[in-house]
Image 1 (tube, rainbow over the protein chains, first blue to last red):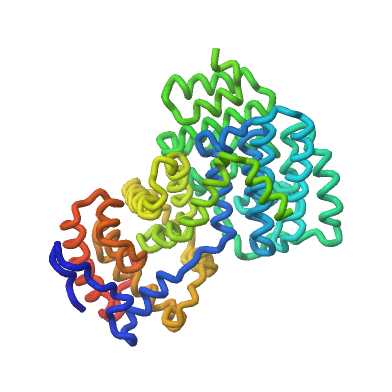
Image 2: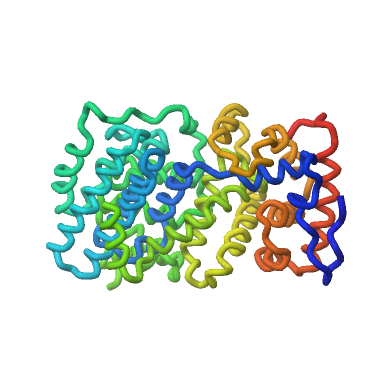
Length: 277
Length: 188
């Protein structure tokens, strides 16, 4: 075991190569380097990031940023069976959002919406690892998965597209069974701030009242948490979804007053155009 | 569906989410691995990973593509340290067996030598890493496991190169000593 060279000299050879082949430390380092997290877990993280990231969806807010998260959620659902198709769903739906915004042509949005919804439906159907289409608000893993079938109803055009796509794609006889032991049995009272917000964000379109409960809980337990702005952004979206627009405006104004240069400003102004006045 | 997706990707033009997805796909595995080796508890890795990629999402366009890898590693180092400083150790949240169950679906690679190494040896490595300071640990993990260059580590951690050398030297000594010590102590 040699020490690294002095500064200015060559970097020392890495132990994964320099140590003897039968040195267990060499094997351990190589094992550590070879580790790979399951794609399912990473997809879940991805979905939560795009759901609450500032300006998410590249400004494609017509359909709502959460919508893209829906697509990503479908990706997460699809990982074990059809990861590539899950990705296709993400691209398809994200494209739907951005094209709808960019062109403003409704017909186009409908067509793309159908494609997007179809790919989501397909991804869900192909997956053997998906949850049934019932909301499961207590389990982080399942709540993301369970949203796939209800992914579309953010715009008025899409529910029809989903109805057309999903039933044929997922006949009840082939309805996948819930996730098994791979998911972590989260202890409800000890969820982290990020986990609460992930769940809240997942509930915005399917169960906004539940989303508000969750952000309340996050606020109560993590008053000084590092994700306060993301929490308020989710709250604003949920308030709009429940029709409490005035309250949403009030909350959004508070957030903007506290941090006028927040990266969430463009998104808030898109959600609530009246804020710009 | 795939053809449509490819087409839609093209039509999207300056297509921020596909771009972010590409960055995420390229680096999330590494980031996950770094966080594990930096000692973030298994049950909390996904949360920290989420925080890491919220930062990435906000700023990746400002970073030269070639530098994104080391930059992401640097964020992991900072977030892991923040995480520990904040004392967010909810010891009761997950039991040891739940922790093990979570870790169990992390797979090892195809390297034959890695395959030969038992999970016990990996646990031994983690215990050895636990004997390091945060700074030493970061350098050791980024150099010996992630295989960044020392220069990239210096940049990623905003540390002078000479300091990085010194930390690697100390970290190596400690790891070698702790790793070869018979396992009498429990992991922290």
